[in-house]
Amino acid sequence: MPWKNPSLFKFDFGHIARHAPSAGGVYGIFSDAGWVYFGETADLQRRLGEHLIDAKHCIHRYSPLHFSYEITMDRSLRCHELVLEFAPPCNLGLP
Image (cartoon, rainbow, N blue to C red; front, side):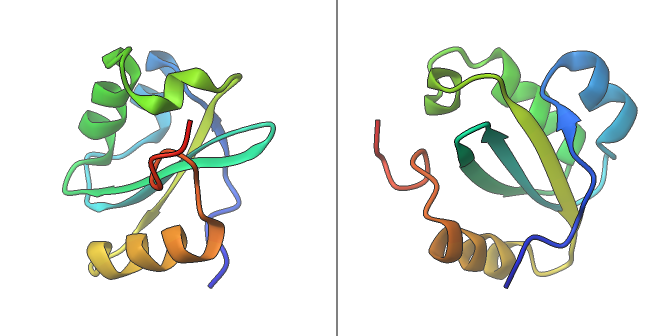
């Protein structure tokens, strides 16, 4: 199932604070090469901020980075669908 949110934002603190809600959903982080990572959380803004400061996370091997999100109640299922469809390297443990 394709990504449902056409809005894309730069992956930095300012854009996360302005555009990511403190609501539950799934999020995708991507670079010019494509989707890098999908995750699910009860608080999109908090979790995206945590990824931004976690310099050891796989996502920081790619740049420039952007993010998008979908508000959904069935976060785990949606995240699983996205990982299966797009096979992002950081979900699959690839370099």
